Length: 199
Image (cartoon, rainbow, N blue to C red; front, side):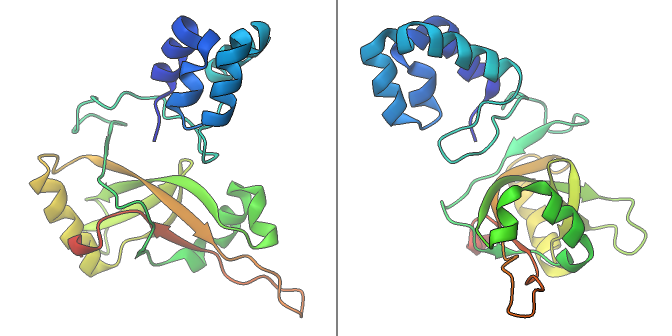
């Protein structure tokens, strides 16, 4: 997950050689900027504007993260980056209740493609059914939960990392949505990029 303000500073200072594009994983266009003085200055200016407006995405098509990585773990709205393994394997539960939300999040779902997103893991200490619940949000909207077993193990790992009350942040994918022969879509599901040995 790449930082919006890091990309913006790199763009301002070194955008003419494509430093911000290398940073977010857009290496091909980074080399193009390197040899064309940031597309003759026009691409450099346009990228700076898109970063400010929150429209600039990284090489995987994911939005840049606006808040700093060093934000306090216990602060409201702060999030800590969770370690990943580079592949999304951890399943969540309850997506069946959030299918409309998942379909509204991205345009790719209608064709059954996988969509890379950022997920936030919210500790729901005030959940009346389970005070240990961990809710999964994508783009500020709830899309499911960790299972009861996973939620407890996740909380233990969060405490081990030194952030027992923090909102966690990790990469995720949304799968499904392919149309069947009868015209109905398959259910969408969410997988998280978290270490499988946590669970």
